[in-house]
Image 1 (cartoon, helix red, strand yellow):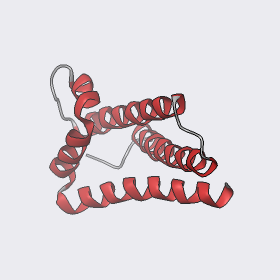
Image 2 (spheres, rainbow, N blue to C red):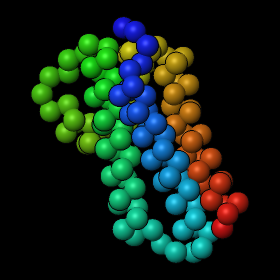
Image 3 (cartoon, rainbow, N blue to C red):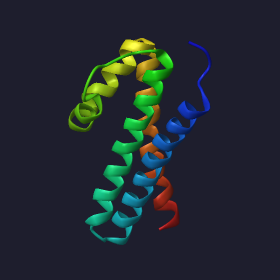
Length: 117
């Protein structure tokens, strides 16, 4: 396993970009007192899709085979699968670092929206 490929980096950028956008939009809507409605559904789908794309690229880079319907199972239980996958492939310390970065990106998006709205 070598350094991350451009596809893996793009996938990670999409994940963190969609998480930051979700946090920012959620914070902006909250600051203006508007319910999210359709935006919430779209943003949730964007996060799920980008996480699925990242998982597929990272899995290929590491040469792992998960069998059939991994993507469907990911959509059903991604909050369980991603921490398990990160722990299995990176160890507990690096997995926790990635999870904390994911949460911090969302929180930073929420705080950034409060600055602008």
